[in-house]
Length: 139
Image 1 (cartoon, rainbow, N blue to C red):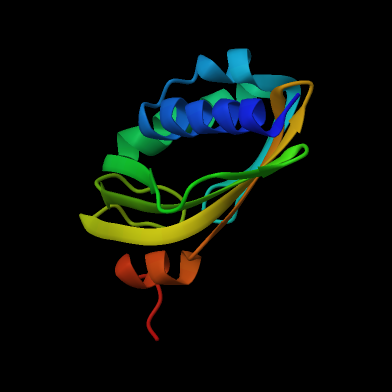
Image 2: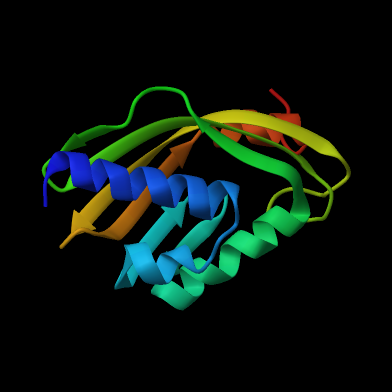
């Protein structure tokens, strides 16, 4: 699978899954043993676990939206996406009390591809900034 095709799969997943909360895209674009990790969200293994979290996030965070801040970069089986996330936390979830906290934080998603599908998504986000915005952490 070429770099351009891998980039296309990751870009579609990024938009459909993270922005549109389309859990069904996991069956189409991810391996059956897909692994997703994000420090603010958790560690998820397999399609069912990965599909289960996105609706919960969008239900708790109004206007939850991710925007790529740089062009995606692909080399071999790795695709990297830099992004900014925004939203307003309306329901308690994870570290966030859900009292109208407005979030805007950056992050990076690193996708590992296998046979044209996403096998792993490792996210690193500016969790400290998000936790300060939520009033959970004071600097």
